[in-house]
Amino acid sequence: MRGDRGAFPLAAHSRRSRRRPQACRANHARVANSPGCVEDALLIASELMTNAVVHALPPASLRLHWKGVQAARTLRIEVTDAGRAPLHQQVASPSPLAETGRGSVIIAALSSRSGITTRANEATRWAEIHTSAP
Image (cartoon, rainbow, N blue to C red):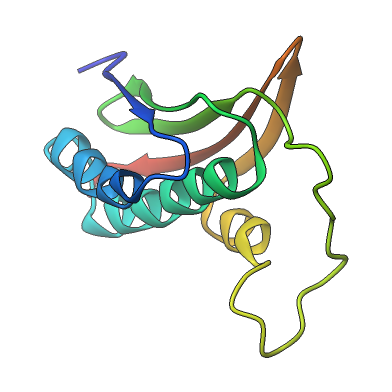
C-alpha cells in the first residue's frame, strides 16, 4: 500500500484531540510491520499533537504517510499548525518532577529522524519511523 495517507484535523484546545491516537491506530495498524512500530507512532503522534494544541496557534492537523515498499517502509507523522502562540516561554530543560517538557526527547528517542519545517504562517513538526519486514 504505497503512499497510504491519513489526515485528521485537530480542534484547538479540545478534548477531542485525545481521541486522535485511536484514529491513528485504526488507520495504520493494518499496514504496520510490527506492533512496536504502531505503539511508537501513537506516542510520537500524541507528543506532536499535544505540542500543537498547547503551544501553537490553530488550526492544526495531523497527517500520516507511508513511504517505501512492504519490506522497508517509513511512516512519516506530521502535525502542521499556524505557528507559535505569542508569549510562549521556552523551558531549557524540565525539572525532574515536571509532568511536561520531554516531548522532543521522546520523539528523538523513538524516531529515525525528526524536525521542523516552517513556511509563512505555519509550522510542521514531523518524525519518521523506519520499519522492516519481520
